[in-house]
Amino acid sequence: MTVAPSSVRELHAPSLSHRVRDAAAGFWIWALATLASRAPWLVNAVKPFFVRMAWWWSASIREGTLANVRRILGEDSTPAERARLGRAVLGQVYEFFAEVGRNCGRTREEMLAEVESVVGEEKLIQARSTGRGAVIAVAHMGSYEVAAAALTGRERGVHVVFKREPRGHYEKLRRQLHERLGIHEAPVDEGLGVWFRLRDRLRNNEVVLIQSDRVMPGQKGVVLPFLGGHMEFPTGPVKLALAAGSPIVPIFALRVARAKVRIMIEDSIDVEACGGPGAALSRLASVVERYVREHPDQWLLVTPAWVEDQERA
Image 1 (tube, rainbow, N blue to C red):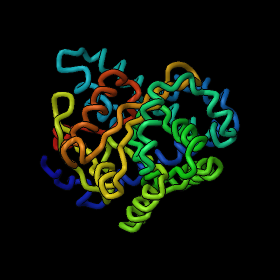
Image 2 (image 1 turned 30 degrees about the horizontal axis):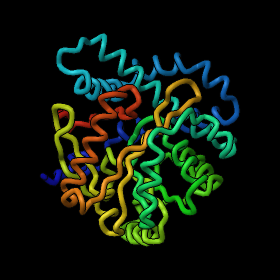
Image 3 (image 1 turned 120 degrees about the vertical axis):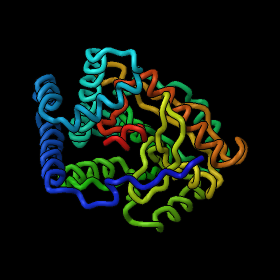
Image 4 (image 1 turned 180 degrees about the vertical axis):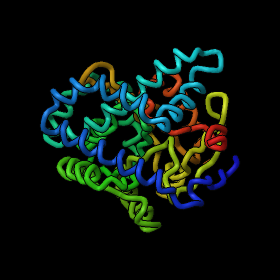
């Protein structure tokens, strides 16, 4: 395995144009989530217009998304096929931010009413029978807030690892949602201490949700083969599981219809039993790869994910 080098974007302060673009994005995300909490019917009605306008007006979103779908569909895909999938991805991103706003006014029971089915629940039950907690590895796919809500109904302690958004208004909405559901937030920007607290929570037989398909600031990553190229995967899930002696359980919450989610639970990964951290991370990456291949429109990344495309950017 090769430790990925720091990106150029991490070495230099963002330019004025980047700061303006981030501020504009923050405003629209907050506006979308807030509107969804008050007038969900209107959010549904304007979605086609919003997606078309965002696709044509934001070159960075369009180019980043097209770079990803080109890798997923392959070099033989046509520009029309790539654009169609790219707009579908953007539509799912729209749904994700709107969903946070809608859920702020819902109870856990109302959120769980959206769960169409749970596939592989016996795998989670088996993993939890060890009494050693569980690292729930999720990805930027579908509706993982619904998956988190489902876990709070069966677990005494659910902790979510995340990076605070610079968009303060949106962050406030998400925090309110987590507080109402009884989810404990673990911001990675709080430093090394948060990882020790999470290790202790796992040893207390609680669960930790952590993203497995993107390296957050402050995390270390490893570059692995991914759909014909290479992608950097965070080592956090594997290191945390190893430190606490916990299994890793990959879980995906896929949208299968409007307001319906199918929760998919995969075989657990025991870091030591599968040959150590490197082998465990490779196995986790292969699971993510399979879901991205099978459900490309639900992978919510609009910036270049492949190392080769990041270097060009």
